[in-house]
Image (spheres, rainbow, N blue to C red):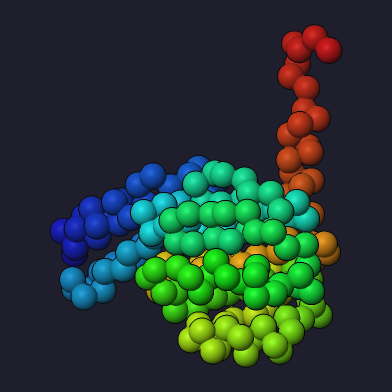
Length: 193
């Protein structure tokens, strides 16, 4: 039994190696056999799969490689461009021409229209269908997640994303901000102000 426990600890240590101290570690369960092994990869820290969107704001997007992109963007698995639209009404044949002239042809274009309730015209949807490009149209919050998922899956995907003007703030966001503010306001005992 002790040899099994030692073997289990040896297998668990590489999985937990490199974890950040602020992340709580869940102890590994005992392995019954080799088929019980699991591995984990944090997608937004692994840039070998291409660019991923870590976060967004009213001003733009933060990418997995640490880069900030301001304003609307056209994002591809390994590159990013500024996209010259301001809102969903500005999406027309000219603004979409980049996506259907590319080689190799993209499988799917994920359009983030900004805020919920914004729409892309049916004329543009039919236009892209004629070009044999599938569309996924949703608010930017969802579109970022869809782009990341399809990109990691290895699909030939592109994103046309407009930063939202409104976004939801949840309790986790508030708690994180309060923790950051508390650490900024801490004063060391012998510190001169």
